[in-house]
Image (cartoon, rainbow, N blue to C red):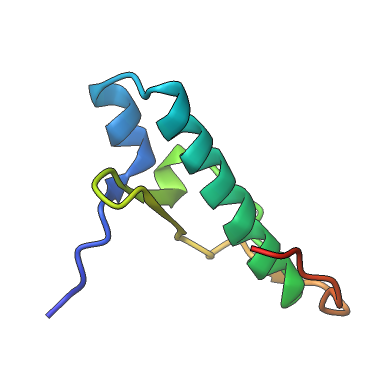
Amino acid sequence: MLEDSGAELASCLAERRFSLSEALDVAIGIARGLTHVHAVGVVHKDVNPSNIVYDPVTRTVKLIDFDLASHTRRPSSRVLAR
């Protein structure tokens, strides 16, 4: 069984216009995801609406498609608070 994590952000954006509140939730979710990825020394290198999964019910954002990602030499020792 697979978890239903939502749809590509690109398709959600094509279907409708987000409210300011929802757009900010998405932006914050992307920033938090990138913060955690960078904290472990990974650079995604292909962040775009097709590589972000969004669930409009829970307003959950997930980064996907790390095919072009790379590791930095050292993981970041700083992680911002949630």
